[in-house]
Image 1 (cartoon, helix red, strand yellow):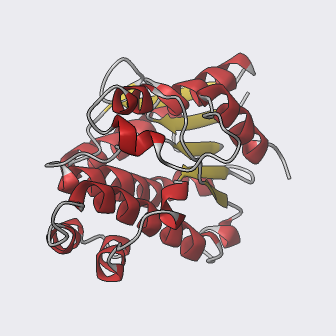
Image 2: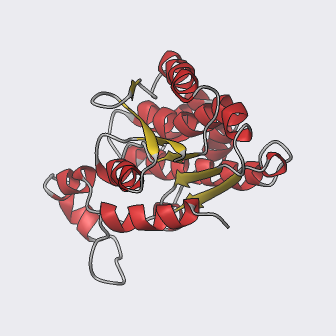
Length: 234
């Protein structure tokens, strides 16, 4: 039995991954706002530190893997919260938990990105760079200049930033050199509670217009299977 952290474990893709790992006999430390083992708000510095502290205590300083699935979709008026959760809720957590991952034998990390990084225009590179550097406030100021598109740009910028961060960190001595394998998965539209609510809202037409070449949405269970393959021994 191995011990895995799964963020966003209360619903959607995170819940599907947690259930799949548990069914395979592994111990799962779920992290979300409620109804899981560790309850913390990844939108705030204090919440992220609480998450790190409580996960380290729960795993006794050793994690065999982590799946960073927690995230927020586009939402007007919550641009700052979106980038805090989607970027710092990954980068700060993984940095704080790296010693526990390094303590395991060949730990594996899977971060959830998004294929919106290739499909959303006008994302300011300066905002992405600030997010990679951990400056959520500065990035948000830049994003809010894009009137009428701020929600979509905040989401795409957050996923671009976390994708770049993973690529840069994954090959460093601190990660690959410590035996930690880190990968990112970039799903398209997946029928999570978030997507269902978007389809039912006033932005449903925009969501339905997003290109889906296979003509059907993915499911959380499909994503969980792919994540399990990424967590399997190389």
